[in-house]
Image (cartoon, rainbow, N blue to C red; front, side, top):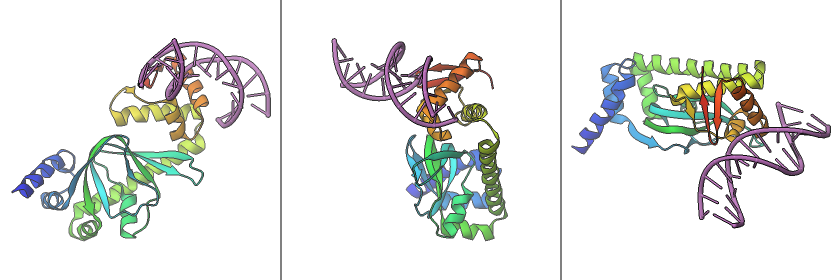
Amino acid sequence: MKMENDKDQILEKLQDYYSVVFDDELLNEIAEIGVYRRYDKGRTMIEIGDELSEIPLILDGAVKIIREDSKKDEILMYFLERGDTCAISFVNCINKNKSIFRGEVEKDTECIMIPVRKIEEWLIKYRSWRQFIVDSYHNRMLEMVEAIDSLAFMNLDDRLYKYLTDKVKIMRNFNLHVKHQEIADDLNTSRVVISRLLKKLERSGKIKLGRNKIKIIDL
DNA sequence: ACATTAAGTGATT
DNA sequence: AATCACTTAATGT
């Protein structure tokens, strides 16, 4: 009885973003197999080196995917949001590899976890699942290329502005609650530099600064 | 009132 | 663009 209830709740949540992606039979099976989970903002969902045994289907929220080097320097790769999954972790799963990224919860996140076995099984069983995984892999690839491009071809001013506008989209809010130091960490630079560039953006009227907050005025 | 943390700035490399 | 060294401002106890 309780099980049925859980299943129905999961199914209901799935409808919002995944009913167009998956057919009914698959949707039903996901609801049956998947485990609903909530992650609070600030938590680490996955750490570099961790072994994956399941992958998340994001229902709501956002997860920041970070790459870190041996010297603890880090750089933001991309965000996962509703409707996303991480196909990178999916391939990791199948090969029983360790995660090459860290996932930090940027915004309270709801997701459904799918165990590896099912991921593989469904790949054969459902065309819509196959499509979803391939699309997801492609999207991760595009986002990584974007990350490389901005790193290689953009100066810090533009990278910073892109960072801010991306974040506005992810958070669905023009008022960002973020410290200069956190931005510096994400872009792998120093706080002083970020503070100066932000001041410049404020002077040009694109943003408004406050303690622990930044308001983006025009996109 | 004092300590702590975040942000602003000039000078130097 | 990074670092240092310092100031100023906001917030917590």
